[in-house]
Image (tube, rainbow, N blue to C red; front, side, top):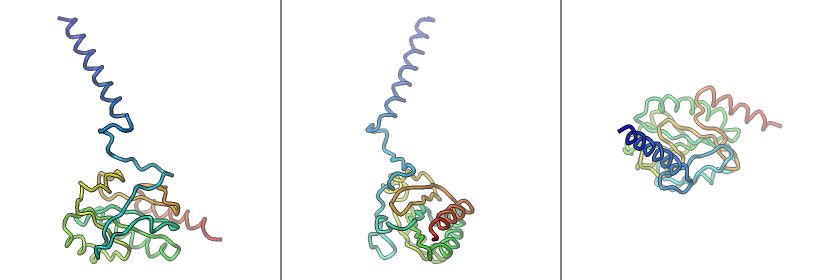
Length: 178
């Protein structure tokens, strides 16, 4: 009886190690989430704006860009919008761009939130919400979720909010002054 128990335990441990090894394989069907890494190129991002025109993140090269994933129904996102409005007014004249990506399923709610929050920068929407290929490529598992992209198109920071984001932008734009 004790020998059967040991065999079952050994089998379970072996299966666990095999599962861990399978998950670690780079081309495994289980490794479907891309992991944006710092100083690596940002994943592709092409989505429609308010007018339905496709906008590509690559069009923002040569500028620092805050890519902000959000939704109108998300209270923390709406609070972060106030911070972004303030930072956009301060740093946009120096070259900062903000590109907001809404994961709203309801277009009317998204448009109402843009008006209510006074968001004057480029707004994109992916009505596939949590089934979004863009959100998956960017490893967005919740909102708000933000990324700071450098002028070469590389991710240099993730999930900086409030004072952290302001401090990082101050560092960047202080270095850029002659």
